Length: 252
Image 1 (cartoon, rainbow, N blue to C red):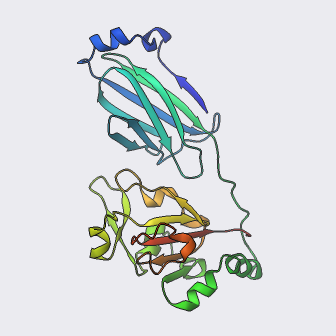
Image 2: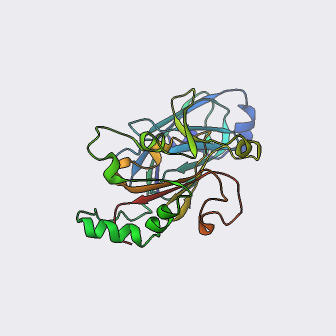
Image 3: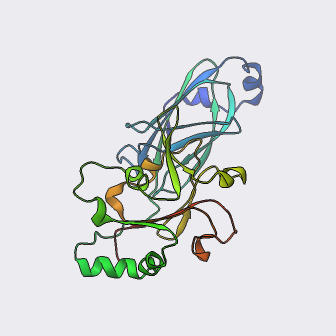
């Protein structure tokens, strides 16, 4: 991770006594998130001010902005699917704007695009997709069902599947909610998401499901209304939450 603080070094000096004296002098923070060093902006990256219960998603230019931030030391966390989670500390100056640039390091390896039908079938067969589809316990969709239907997002595909509800938040994000009332009563606020068999953190308070993964990367999707329906390896905790399995393009 490469972090560049775009303010004078003296402003960022770690002086606890000065920070305490300026406790009522709120400031602003602007964090620009990019891929690797000098890479493209990482739109949708979740930027959280840990301990302050504040988080926003970076805009299309990779910029996250916070206003009315108390001065003093602060821990920042940045998350985005496909990149390693980054945490670092800063000291917020009083009555000023702290500008920071952060380069995220790529974590996941992008699989090669599948072009031949035989390779496509082999890829999904290795995951057990077709056996589960034959069981009829869940809801299933493959790339062939949405290709050529115009400009769609991941949520457009899931909206046509049984087991979860697609909803929009007041700030314009897209989230997945339980379709069963009992699931909500048991503490399930969102579906459990697995990408290529790996549980992927998703927080409906901050994340947008369409920014976690693009539909162009996806080969197939499985949705299970409750943990009892889902394959055992994708519900090890015995949760009653809905489960969504996302399989990306590529050989496995």
